[in-house]
Image 1 (cartoon, one colour):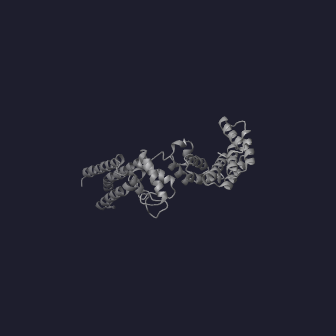
Image 2 (cartoon, rainbow, N blue to C red; image 1 turned 45 degrees about the vertical axis):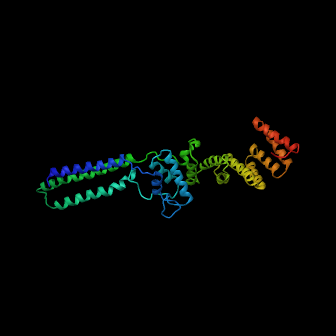
Image 3 (cartoon, rainbow, N blue to C red; image 1 turned 120 degrees about the vertical axis):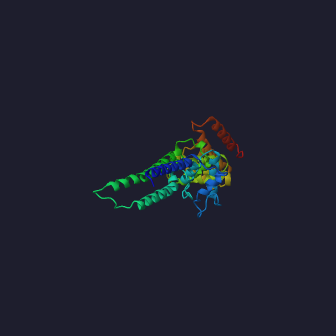
Length: 335
């Protein structure tokens, strides 16, 4: 085999490898159902080797719902997968995708095999020991013949490293508590907040996100979804006093309005007042339960008078509370 032919072959192999790499980089396989294809690639965190697309578990369904939402938002497959892996502890890729940083895992074995075979064939044709210190010409000849193979190996390494560098997601998904802390949570979906909370349950900043999500559920009348988040905030040692008070007040009102539990509601309001004795909301709602549930008008009247004594009370609230106080004093029924 002539040296010119070997050089031409080496250059051709480098060009082919670069062309294959460019093709993998610039093309993205389009699938009829992206949601299904993404779900097939993620292992369910609570299942035995099943993908989230095939698992009947509630967590898998929640994850698939998140995938559907992200696909509808136009996010890339890589961004969606990164968010799932970051947010759900135990979720892993069932197989590495042939793109991005994992491209090396797919190309390296084939490239290594090609280079290794080339080196072995060259070595068999040019065994060592043919040169001598007195006559170094054979050694120089072998070095010249080995140069194309070394160039091929070097080019392969450079191409793979550069591809891995440029294809990786440098920013990553903004789904952590710290990342979302500075964002307007109104723009973050319930599903994303649920996922972040589940993956960061011990994070010191998670209580604020829990409370924001619970407030959404509460305002929508979904007490069942709001309850566990309020309960977690109320029992958290990291929650701020205002957060704990808000959670206790909401729990107390849900206990009364949702289940008619008078004693439980009053206890929860007392817990909130033990933290903030000047909470107008806790005093007003406790008065409502005392009046409407426990029929303790005198205590309810005293609490409403205390609230009305707050000079910072808004006029609209003052009119409502005054109307309730007048009704109690006149012996009227609670509204």
